[in-house]
Length: 292
Image (cartoon, rainbow, N blue to C red; front, side):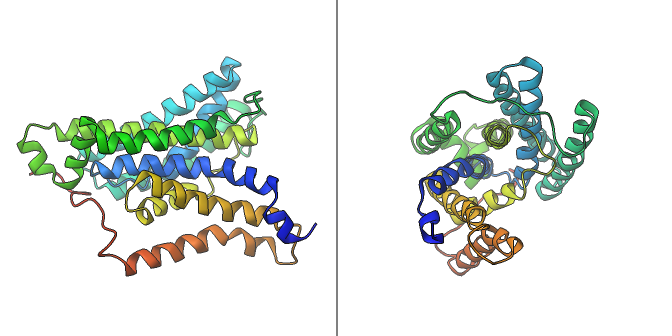
């Protein structure tokens, strides 16, 4: 089979679909957070922490759904901590995000060794016994639901108001702090679903398994102009490149390290394009600003 046949094979399409979910869920979480006005670079840490929580929950309960619940809850808690630090504690969002990423990177290794006696990977889990990927179905529903919430509901309108002009939002009676906290925690829960999907796809937790996906998802948020459908499409592109470098490793003489950087090169290229179109793609006007 030629390299071209591999690229357009059913396995490539299936791999791309599965790999879109962690990217996409993290991007949706970033959209929720940043449309409310809170910068969130902690998506990487949320993916990693929720991946471990989902595996630990699945092992402890003997249930795949128990693992999903633990992963989503961990993501929500991760987002809540970030919101409390930034919204209530007035800590710089970049500092908070970096700190949480570092805590997740070190904390997951510590817990992995404490729980399972290994610093590299957990015991295997079974996951779901279905022919249809429940994570993929959930992701598609979430994209449509989030787009509808942002455009058609009172919650979405108030969240966008907090992200565009928090002082004006407060003046008309919106509790900006509560709204931002809810949005970031909800975004954390969605990101947690992505971390759970990542762990279930590999049927175990591996140290550092997020592999930069949270940062690429953050780039997708920016490239998309903070819109759910566009963010999902950007993540689909990044996932396709990620899948491509995997399937081509046995089909080409190029070093695997060269192929592995494809998603990151594409991310940098996309950000360069966005920087040249700054007048067309702008962040929420109140992003990173507190109401006065």
